[in-house]
Amino acid sequence: MTESKVTVEQLAKAALDLDDSLQLRALTQEFLRQNPQLSEINRPNTNDARALAAAASLIELFALRSGQQPPVWTTEIGPLPEKMYLINAAAMGSYTRRLCDTESPEPLRKRGFLAPPNFLEFL
Image 1 (cartoon, rainbow, N blue to C red):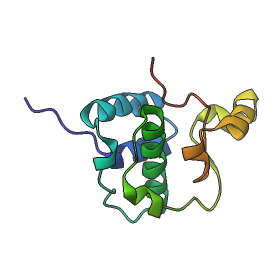
Image 2: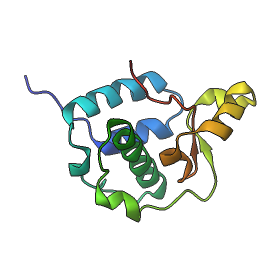
Image 3: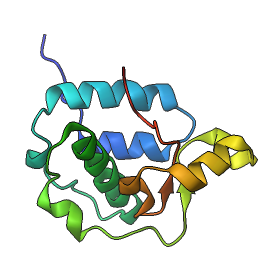
Image 4: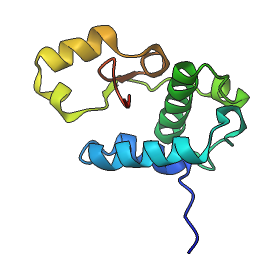
């Protein structure tokens, strides 16, 4: 039985779908296991600016945390026109929202995504 490869497009879509954070975490763990060399990840095959921004932000976040260089294509991807929270709890206006506003990881923040500082960290 062949294992299906998790794509950066799947990660971006899951990140933009705020209703399934467990799916995003599971996909992220599998993606990182399958792709130890983040600099070799190809640019997503989409023209969706939100998906491209999410993909670039996530890959840069993982690269930063693992001490790697992100793929060159990530530098070509600009920010969202307005900020977007990557967790549902932030939309309700709370401590979590303030935490996202002030401590979101830089690779996410620079493209307009806001999340807690430990977003998608695994022990």
